[in-house]
Structure formats: structure tokens, C-alpha cells
Amino acid sequence: MTSLNDGRHMNDIAVGDIETVAVDLADRRYDIRVGAGLIGAADRELADLIDGRHLVVIADEGLVGAPLGALDAALKASTARRVDTLTTPAGESGKTFVQYQDLCERALALGIDRRTLIVAFGGGVVGDLAGFVAASLLRGLDFIQIPTTLLAQVDSSVGGKTGINTRHGKNLVGAFHQPRRVLIDTTVLDSLPERELLAGYAEVAKYGALGDRGFFEWLEQHGKAVIAGDPDARRHAIVASCRAKAEVVAGDEREQAGGRRALLNLGHTFGHALEAMAGYDGSLLHGEAVAVGMVLAARLSVRIGACSGQDAERLTRHLDAVGLRTELDALDPTRSWTADALLAHMTKDKKARDGRIVFVLLDALGEARVRDDIDPAQARALLTRQQAA
Image (cartoon, rainbow, N blue to C red; front, side):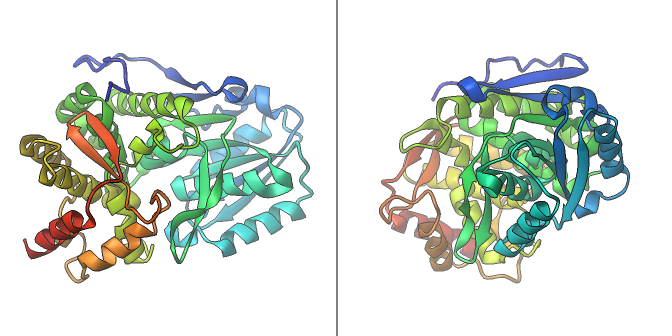
């Protein structure tokens, strides 16, 4: 697979105030704006989209206070006709039919019309939920993503996937609905707990592992600085990740069979199964599951002879080095992650084809491919071995 980025991964990180990454989808093209202080500058950053419109902010209830206050003040200083705010719980357990219906009913009660603009303000769960509300209310409303976690900034806010979970699995009900703009304020990460930062970092590392060895090597040098809060390292990691995803989405918006967008699911076939087994109760974050999922995918790649053991261990060492858990028994020693239960969830994954589990596996660090020809016995043997280790 060719590089997803353009090789700009220097030891000396370019310093700049705001960077723009374009998601090129013809008449639905939009910009991702990355920089410090963008929440407080939302009136200027969104001026061309909000003039005279009714704005409905759907916000993580945990952001009530300074973050939501700053956004509310900026939007009310704009030329918007009206600004209303609805709050909703964060966490996968809140991405349900019940919360979706509640938000739709509350939004309708505000007297929305087809010019109403939905603003998603929070992490990936709130973005997915608010995006699905926007996709379905009045058969589709414009919306804006203002992600406040590292995971949402580099992954879920970009690309237009929206949805909710069911008891059968994650994101099984939803729609493709692209935002009109994405505002990524890097300073909001300063107050994010380290566990949330690490969960987001797993998605950053994913971009290097699946399509850009140069970026992965940059992360080996600067990953700890990204976690520690170096502003230039953080901006570079976010911009590189968004650029990688934007390139893939522009070429394969709806993850067509055989398309490149499926590569973005590296670690997710195992990871989604782990999340489902954990019950979306907050004990296992999405990025934590993806980190273990990437290691399992790399080891499965070695098992079938597609990837060298050195590359698989290099990926594992890097994730370990920044503080991510990489082994099944490290996730929750009290829980039984049985091979049969995990495989049962994997067969229900939305990526499955005709009953076959679809994996994203590595040929090497920086080179991935989609495989639907893997004997489940290979995955079962790997998982059984990991449990016995």
C-alpha cells in the first residue's frame, strides 16, 4: 500500500497558528481547521455557515462550564439568529436509541427548520450521536463537528460516519453524513485525562501502522511529547492523522467493498469485539480496545506469514512505550476474553461479508490490506494462545 501522507515528518516540527486540511468530496468539500483557541473563535471560523441560522449545539454534559461557556459566548456573538444547547451523556453507554430519540424530540421542540445547523461539541460518542440526529431530522440537516478529545479529533469527527450502538454490536444503526466543517482546538486537550489521551493516541499510531511508515517513525521519536502536551507535536500528529483520513475518505467515502476506507479499520475487528464483550460500560475505551486489536492483527499477520515478527513487535513496543496496554489479560484480569465469544462478536461486525470475518492485516509497518480469506481457526488459535500467555 502506498503512503497515506506526503512524507512531511521531520524532526523539526513546523510552527504555525492554524492549519487547514481539505476533505475533497466535490460539491460537499469541507475543511478541517486545526489550531489553538478555535472554540473561542468559532464566530469567525464559522461566519460563512451560521449567518442568520438557528444553531442547536449538542454537547457532552461533562463540558458544561468553561468549555461550553466559551463556545456559547462565541456563537452568541456571531450573526446566528438563535443559539440553543442540548446536553447528552458521554460514553458508549449513551450512544443508544433512547438517547437518539430524546435528542430528536428535544430538537424538534425547539422549532427547528431545514436551515437549522447542528453543532456537535464533545468526544466521538457525542459526535456520532449528534451527526446521526443531523442526518435524520427533517431528512437531513447541516452539521459541524467540534471534537474535544484526541480520538474524536483524529478519527470520528472526520469522514461522515454517524450512528448508535445496539445490543448486537457497535455502530450498527447510522448513516453517512458529512459535516460542513470540523474545528479542532488543540488547547482543549490540555485538560483531558491521560487515559483519554492515550486512547486517542492509539488511533494516531494506527495511521502510521497502516499506511505511512515515515509517520510511524516520527511517532517513535515524538509520541511521548504528543501525550505530554507539546503543542507543536500535538498539532503535527493531529494534522498528519486528519490528512491521512481525508485522503482515504475522498477516494472511498462509503467504504465500498474493496475500497481503501476499510483500511482505517486496522485493529477494529478485534477491538469492536472486545468493546462488545465489555458491555460499553466505560471499563474499556474505544482506543484501548483498538490498541490491543492492532497488536492482535499484527500477530495474526505474522501467524499467516504476511508480516515479519520484527515489525509486529516494533508496533507492540511503541504502544507499550507511550503507556497503552497491549495484552488481553492487561485489559481486565477479572474478565474472561474467550476466543469463542470474541469470534462470535466478530462475525456480527458490520464489516463481515457473507458470514466471513473481515480483517485488516499488515504486510509490514506502513503497509496494510483487507483480508476476508482468513481461516477463523487461525484467529481462534491466536486468541487461545494470548489467553494462555
